[in-house]
Image (cartoon, rainbow, N blue to C red; front, side):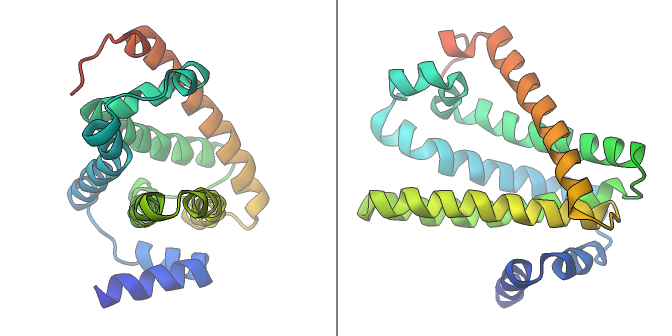
Length: 201
């Protein structure tokens, strides 16, 4: 636990050094996949748990504005989207990064994004607790977490692909994440999730 806390603090203080430390572990794919699926399950539970256990449904107006919010009512589907989306993102970043001169390895990118997801899960748990006692504060913390997470992602992508500039990582991220978002929206539309095409599983 202390080692994880130390790494979390180092990630916030010096993300590139933390990234080098994580990549130096040289974890194998099986270990990384296991960690990814476990963390994806935790994130899915934290995101959908309050909806499923208490409200039962997402606010119709919010769902109409953002159709993907319907996934919060379907924990297993949300887990699949989180885990699958992360794997696609890793592949996309590595492939596109190499296309513009990057030299990263798949396992390096997978390790870094899995660790970032673990930090996100911890932050999400904090926001969930705050939402129960101070909703207005929880909203502010969630915004700060989103900004910090993107900043860390920039450094991690840059480190994994051996970029010498965060601007290259920024451009790559925007392109890959935009493609991923469009792809996910197509999946949501084609599977009919917003119309109740999937059960509450």
